[in-house]
Length: 461
Image (cartoon, rainbow, N blue to C red; front, side):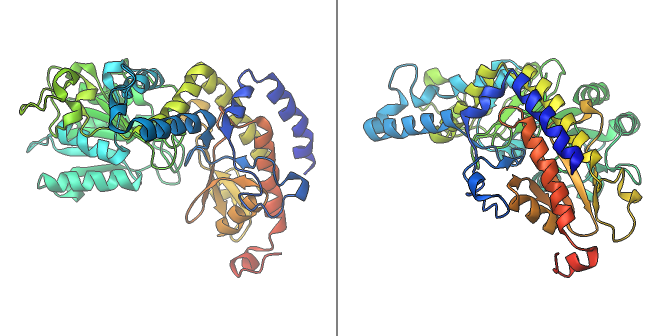
């Protein structure tokens, strides 16, 4: 424990030097009391917990609460008139406030960006337009163990085209004994099989391991082979810098309730590169994608908005939009992704360095003896190949007791059964002291557990 105690002073110093430290106050963080942190002393129960789970659900921005309450009041006082009142800021124009800020975060033009719907619905929508298999070019290239929703979408899309998923879905596996896909292996597969691949669709950041895929190089290689390239940015948007327009990405989708803090089930978004404006119209048209000047005239013929916003289908949720806008305004005020990435690199490195000092840290899962307590980090060690998240592989079959022990000590992470705990120090609201608290709590939790046998038998010391 002494090494962790000595590092607390460093954490305090780093927090004092942090130029964006004040943005933590823009969020409402759960308290130790509200998360039932039973091992926290009584005088700290009303302190904020160590919330390292924003990669799953971001906390509430105070501005989002304010904007949602404003819209509730407008609903109460104006009802249907709220769509056009006040002029230029009615509900009909609400996305005009969101799309420009979102475009900055993803490195796109506003016309290429649409805040709308939900991630998987948007994925199906864009695959419906861009996945056009032929007898010779029909495969979808993706990573193995993509997020289940993506896997389900790929399977259902190829079946809808009368194809066999076992043949049409080409999953890339890490090399034996490794957890990450190597860039050279992805590029080699594209080079060798590109003529049969209709669509390349990876996660921007792999949800389980936290690997940040090389979006630029993969996109360039795939397009050179005649493939369409899409990205699921659920764990990348608001986490790492993106340049979708300059990288020539064909399309992308994302959710906003993780790093973008829009609230549970919050509004998603999509990107369509402007190179498709004259080539591809939405195949599943809806009235909200119709040009605004004649939308409410209800014409029988669809006239899409040029660009990504032409893919809109239904009028968006005003309350979800207000919540997302509240968070996006915080991002904009903080200066966008550049200062956030700078702090993220420092903070994730600091947490990793503390974890590597732990007496329970194992350089790899294979370095642990059978039945030995400990953990390995399966997120890439190269900072350019990861975002905020560190995924800990808990060894010895004791993930759940370790996860419960962290929560009892006021550390909220994310569990991925059977054996991974994800911790994500996020620069907008987490601190270097949060990293120190998490490392100390992990050390204390392991120390408090008995042997692997007793833990598995639920007899925890």
